[in-house]
Length: 373
Ligand code: FA5
Image 1 (spheres, rainbow, N blue to C red):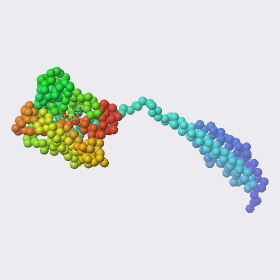
Image 2 (image 1 turned 60 degrees about the vertical axis):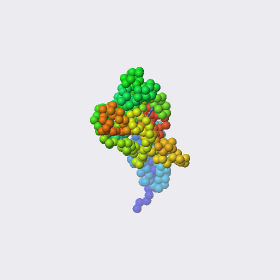
Image 3 (image 1 turned 90 degrees about the horizontal axis):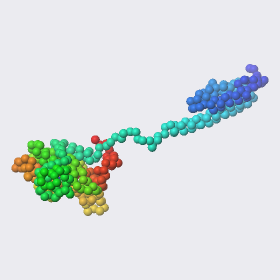
């Protein structure tokens, strides 16, 4: 076996000469500094730190050196590679920071810019709720009937058995469009309720008649938390042989259960309407406390003010005089009618405290009701 090459001089290996190592190191550092972006830096890394880079090739030469020369050459190459690694990491951090800053600027969203999408509108809860009520009745075989909002005084009052001097006809209750002598059957009014659609439906159809009549009505009421001069009612009319108050109560109870929940009951309180006889106010059991709040201060109910009942609207058996006015034989047919206000119903259904929110058209009120169609 031959002896180690004691006379071997590492300086003789071109790639390991100090000035050569220095040059490789400086070239790498210059390439990193010149890399304008992370992609260029990646290429510079492959060229100056990869397996075929000058420093990596020089490193391989060390293995062939005699032991005493290895340490010095190894230290030289190691220091150069360390410096190159450090320079690379520093430049990489610099370029990454630059990129992040640029992305922040380029992809920034200016929240003050004008909104460029057309917002999808929602239908007003008054409309969608009216439609729900219609659905309950059409499912029972009722037909939807409509009438004009500008109505003949005859349909709005006379045919419904309002006396010529009934206070409801007075200017302070009714908007007169034409005819300034209320009570002469010749005037034209903005209808004050949906009941004139009862008469129109009876004139248009032969019994049996089952109609549900939603619509806008007008009264000279001031706009306040519980009144509006323009509001909505839904009228119900059934004309058939042998109908009684029991049919009326059963029908409304079905509506209440469909809209507010199973098991709820209703009650009738005597009242007066010229067009129904007997007449009643119809209350439904409070759907929130179901009566549990009555006389129970521990458990107050906001919806029914702890009364256990909520007033729904007016109802009764159609007055035979109205049947006659509409050409229907009261000996053969009887009927029931029911009318209620949609705004008031929506108020207690959704705990709306002020009716003005409902009628002023602010989308912030309608939006929470969602896109019900
Ligand atoms: C009537 O209008 C009768 N036509 C109802 C009727 C129909 C009775 C069929 C018998 C048979 P009333 O005036 O009580 O009744 O009004 C009915 C409902 O309209 C009230 O219960 C209330 O919910 C609503 N209402 C009345 N005035 C206003 C108003 N200014 N703003 C909002 N809702 C109102």
